Image 1: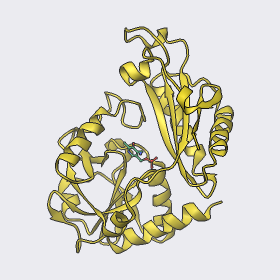
Image 2: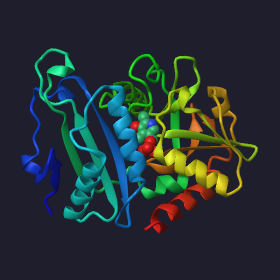
Image 3: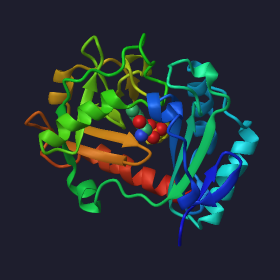
Length: 287
Ligand code: PMP
């Protein structure tokens, strides 16, 4: 079935979902976006994603051309029309059509794109076996540059880190902030376990405040684990007992090696596996 895309105020065939070459989203990466899962026909944590989208837009002074309620209806309609019961929504708001100069205020109106499709980031066996990662040399956005909590269309720092990963034959890279503390992976949040305590870097370390991160923190606490947000160093990652990533696309995935240091016994750890299963149940059971 050909996909229907929501463009601005209506659904169009995907061949007709076109954006101008003068759109500042294309010319400058000027815009914001969200990636959202659909599980069992229910849009997962939609309110949290909508909140983050509007906050990202506020920081970059972008007016989203729709209010929150209308946007929710548009997303629901797009999911329904494309008959997505388990899939992924990409929500994009660009600055809109402007001139070749940088000034965003010559762009009359932001453009809204909603794509609902299927997704599988990693093959199932990698969830069982865990993945290897490297430390990227590319530093996560400085808070005085594009603030790290803004989910902007400009992902070039993360893409440079991803290139480092691919060049090293691993699927992911860990990014550090300008002070050398762990920020996050290229599109996922970082967690470690040490002596049965769960640690994750605070958002101020340069992480995006992940929706999956928040859910996993909640689940870990429900399971009786202590969860501590604190700055982590590269060595903390090397000597942890367990290591995993969380994100909308990746969900929960264990890490078994970083920079040639084996984590634990080289398999995803027990707490990682417990939280992965709890997460799986939580998202699918929640209708
Ligand atoms: N960090 C970055 C840079 C991201 O792009 C994402 C989203 N894929 C995440 C973390 C995870 O956030 P979420 O759980 O909300 O998808």
